[in-house]
Length: 105
Image (cartoon, rainbow, N blue to C red):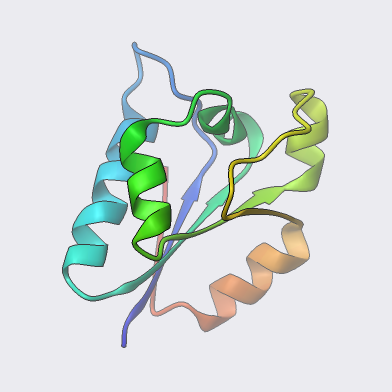
């Protein structure tokens, strides 16, 4: 099975739809029977403050999501939705090594 990794460091701003595009692409990749992982860093962790319904649905369907611990701390975030794990750049590096496809938003 193909492993796809999406790295999201863009925040969920209405003027910049990159976060929305990344979540929708994750759904399309899951529908293509890919194993999909998403790593949130920088402002990308803000997606979890009010996670879109689609993201929560994708988590239930097998989307793996990890977040940069330093980014969570910088944004003052302590709570994570079920299925989302705190990680690090070392975790991201490991996921990158295992991935067949890597995309960055």
